Image (cartoon, rainbow, N blue to C red):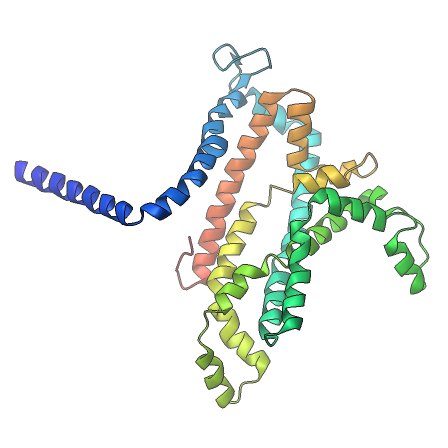
Length: 317
């Protein structure tokens, strides 16, 4: 028995030694990782201590020690809050529209860019598709507000094809889901191609040459070679997208939301921001955030299980 314990301690000691050797060989990379670690520690891990506010009646005059404990009362209030559930419906509606268009479009765009011959035209297309990602929602929101106004660009384009409309589209609550989803896709579709293009660059060209000799046309090569080779990346992006179904873009919402479209524009993030910061109900907002985080974790686990089943029982996480 003592011999077994001694062997286990020796093995554990050897593992620590091997780990130390690896760190010493990669000390430059480890130093580069330190700022990222510090950032995550300060802004991601330390704030998790504030989760206890979800079970307290916390105010600006309280501290974690003095705030009264209310147990699950905040969660009971959430279940009976009709404004919260409307925000949930809006969040899911917008997120599923973004998923329907924003998940497939970067794949199609990446394949189209990959199929272009290297040259100035390909670089221009990539630059144009990437540019919206680098613009803040303050800029893009101002552009959209102008374009969607009664005398904006979209109404002028509609009039050219014989459709006369003088409405300000952002004031129409029924149109907001589509405006939010499509504008997000426009902003991020080009940027979303980068990971796919990087993966496509690693595909062995001889696979296409062999397929061409066998008589496969370009579409068949894309379907039977390109798509299967990027399948793990598609699965990974699907998992990450599913985990974010309850996290709509707060910046976009704050820019595009107004008094007329708020019933359809208010999402969970903006609701938490409004209730937590504007109204000072920190405990309620924390409870909402905790509940959403738990659901998001369940979604990412479920998405991983689904993609594992579709990927020959291999997980990409």
